[in-house]
View 1 (cartoon, one colour):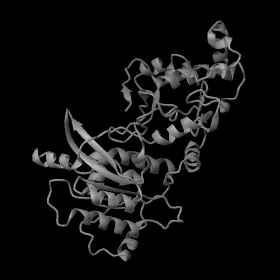
View 2 (view 1 turned 90 degrees about the vertical axis):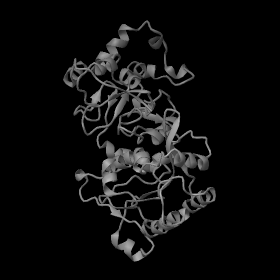
View 3 (view 1 turned 90 degrees about the horizontal axis):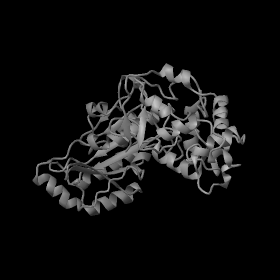
View 4 (view 1 turned 180 degrees about the vertical axis):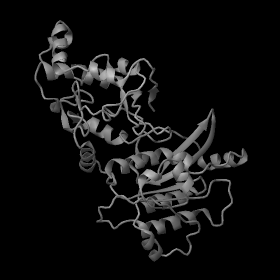
Length: 387
């Protein structure tokens, strides 16, 4: 999880734009520092490990195209082109980009740098509709040395995706970057296609107010609607077809410690039945997502059965307060961020005993939205980027 830097009130975005270097300025800076180890090298291909500190030297002095360099790490083993900015990206950084670009913290801000998808300390854009952040290294290497400190000192800063200017030092935003980003995911990812649907409907065990509270539905999304189903015993395929088509279907067991009308496994089997009714045909290009949440009420055998039916392993997510585990849920889903190695909990306890402890201490399970919110945030951004 990235740290966020809050900006002070001593500068403005306009001041930064005025101070942005041109390529000529960067070349002059290299001439001035020609006695340094960086410039003394004929080419950084002599360096055994990738090093971004040499990117400017290679582009300005050695006239190497930035498309031949991974702008995320400095490697010359370029796999493809960066989807947002002009420059290459290597295989390892491509994999990291796919894993982390749509990951967000609980506050709705991007967890990793928009450019390199790494970085522990990020400078966040102040545009209200933007949630992007940038690491110090990317700013100082690709824009100019000292840029990060200038941005840090500003009162209001609009990031490189929001500013009208497309070029900042070596950092040049691509035109139609949303289209390029979608193509990047279509070509490089084995995950489900990013959605471009305009209708936001879902069958769920979440009330509409909860979905709105996590930002998945609001007035800016047009005609998005939620279909809430409680007891689905008498729901037929024809009913589901009439309500569809769907972009997303959500279901869950009751929270641990609560009373319920059916055996725990009933909720899984009924959800799976509704899912089969509502999902698109296999050869359909329509994007579609689903999620089922177990609030620690299914038996281990039931969970194994669910993994076999869903054809995917479950992911455990938990919340702690001090040394106390307040809540935990088990999730099956095809949302890419759910399966990301960066999202997994390092919870190593007996889930049956944990459920008993939650009931005994009356730390009753919160509504599912409180723990799955971080997975809905990237889904919301998918729709925003690819609609």
